[in-house]
Amino acid sequence: MSFQTPAKRTGRSVDTARIGSGLKLLVLLVGLMWLSEIVDTAMNGALDQYGIISRDPEGLLGVVTAPFLHLGFGHLISNTLPLVTLGALIAISGAARLFAVTAIVTVIGGFGTWLVSPPNTITIGASGLVFGFAAYLIARGIFNRRLSQVLVGVLVVLVWGSALLGGLLPQDGISWQGHLFGAIAGIIAAWVLADDRPKHKSVI
Image 1 (tube, one colour):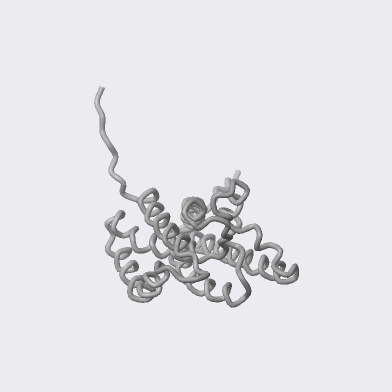
Image 2 (image 1 turned 60 degrees about the horizontal axis):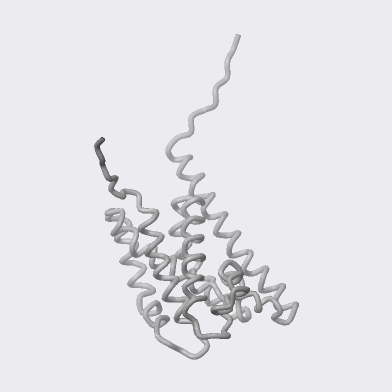
């Protein structure tokens, strides 16, 4: 008789599979944004009404949909490059990590935007997600106490620091609220998903 057992996967193959899954999810997210804008353009901007409508209960739907909607292809292109670059740095840790960070930033950042934005305004775009990704990458090395991640955070600050700070300044037609709460949500994501959170001991 002969027996067959599944081959053990090497550490390198596991790493490759993890990175591959993360990048596939990132491509899916960005692809949905582009598909949404193509459809929105064909419908003369009809989808933009599904953004975050501040302090309107029906506008809460926009917390989930707003990152996939943009005010034209120029707006989408300006968000795509930093989203792909920062998202790829997170995707290296796998699809599960990228999904978790995206979900936390989308929900917390979106709700904060809904709560604080001026009345009767609609917020759309993935820039809140960009700010969340950047803040996550900057903060995670601090929470994880890993030098390599700290260095990545420093690189993010050097490359995008001025743009991030500028995005927090009030400007007509720009949601600084979305940027601010996206960044706050990114820091929360870094804390919640920290690898080395101390475990509390108790005795009975």
